[in-house]
Each structure stands twice: as C-alpha cells, then as structure tokens.
Length: 229
DNA sequence: GCGACAG
DNA sequence: ATCTTGTCGC
Image 1 (cartoon, rainbow, N blue to C red):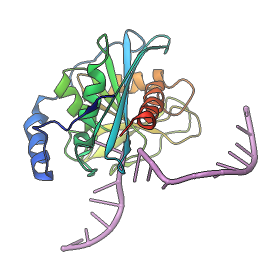
Image 2: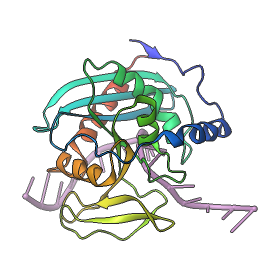
Image 3: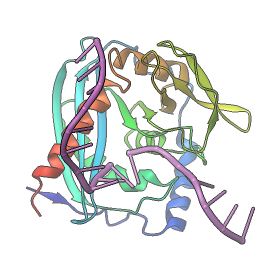
Image 4: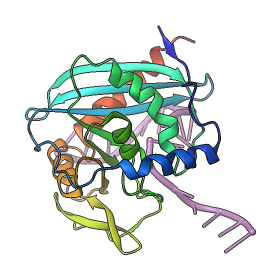
C-alpha cells in the first residue's frame, strides 16, 4: 500500500499556515448557488488519525444525490502533515483528502466535508480551503459549534438558527432530526449558505449527520485500521 | 493575559 | 480526532 508523504511545500509552522490562509482567502466564491440539491453527484470526505503511527487515512465516498446510493469509494493513507491547531484544521486534513479525491474515477460533484467553511475565525475553514485548492463546490457540516454563539433551533427537522460572528451570519445550526443536537452548516466555496443548508437536509433523511459523512467516516476508519506501517 | 476552540 | 462495555430502545 502506498503511503502518501507530506507535501514538500506544505506549511511547517503556524505562522506559515496563517500566511497561506491570507494568500488564498480572497479567492473564495460565495455568490454561486452551486449544484441543484438532489441532482448529480455528492461526495463526502473525512479523515481518521493514528498519532501513534503518525498515520492519517482519508476517504472520499461518492453518492448519487437523488438516491443517496454509493457510486464510488476511494481512500488514501499518508503521514500526518500538520498538528491539530484550532483554526488550522485544514492543514492537517487536506493533503490526505486531496489524495483520496485524486483517486476517484469521475468528478466528485459537490463535496461535503467535516468542519467549517465560512464559519471560521478567519473566514477560511477547511471547506473553503479545499474548495479554493480544487475549484470544486464545497460545503462544511460540523458536529460542534466551535467558537460560535448560537441559539438552538426549534426541535423539528429543517429548523435553523444563525451562527453569528460580529453580527454577521457565517453559518447555520440545522436540525436534521427532531429532538437531537443540530449540525452546523456553512458555505465553503461556490455554494451559498441557503443551498448548503438545503443540500445538508436532503443528505440527512434519517440520521443527524449527512449520509456522505457517515459513509466517509466509516471508510476512513476502516482504511486506517487496514493500513500497514 | 488566559482559556476555549472544527477534527 | 482518540481512549472504550455494556446497554437502552426502535
């Protein structure tokens, strides 16, 4: 099995990573609707870690957006490229994610990742970063509110409440299942917030998390477990 | 200044 | 993210 190395030009320090965010942040596109919800392909990406072995495994699972059936799966195993630093998650996840996406036969369509896009302290979270690097439409669906204040949405499926930063709506808490903790949606790149929420709801007909992330999560864990060091 | 903070 | 058994419930 091939183990992807850390990119030679990858930031090695927090200062370098911050400089990269500053350099790329202006390229984010937010005024496009993105692909129509329920049509075409949707790809979930996720990453699992084994810090003991310094390994990271990424998975990309492509679903038919209309039926939510799995169309294709790909994985990649690599060395951890960056430590976990709140606000710099993208530098830890993206190299392996790019490798997994690169192993897909067809284009991924809309990409859904764990974490945030615009709902980020510096407005350039994982989903936006991945979008700018690939040019793909990307949205972020996180399980935790990070540092953002929000009022819990109503407990019925489809209800939302804004995620506010300096009075600006940078994302939305979305109830995907009655009575359970909401997920936190934000626009990443080439998809506006309204459409990001619509996609997330369609992708989560039964469980709290979108089918895309559920599939990707299971696959990257499996890939990590099967990885040989 | 200190702590908290997506995964 | 990850460390971790059984258990309550549809």
